[in-house]
Length: 149
Image (cartoon, rainbow, N blue to C red):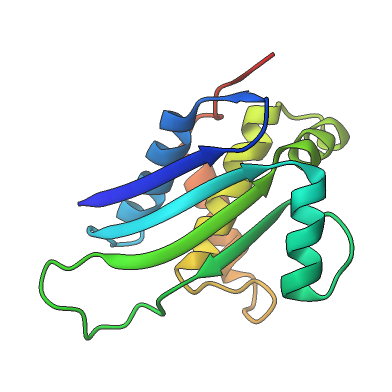
């Protein structure tokens, strides 16, 4: 069983069920059938603070991933992986969507997939493009996240 908690700490109206379903779809595609994790949707001030605290960069970023486990194979049969948290800055997401001429929902889907892959141990800064190729393949199979005005 997969359990994804979505906490929207902004006034933006984002389809939380679609966010959770997207994370679940990525996990299934990556062979994870039992997991717990969360997605937190935040504003610029919160994301800037988190980025400063955890990456020593006093600036906003679009997505951060805070993995808990490392895919440890020592879990008891049927026990869920404790994935950790994906944090997305919705204001930065909206800015990037405008810059890239895509919908906010498309950009949000990209950031959710990206963060989820990081929770699973992928690292685009250390691989030869495999993570971003996998991200593109997963995104080709999903719909944008609902995000209304």
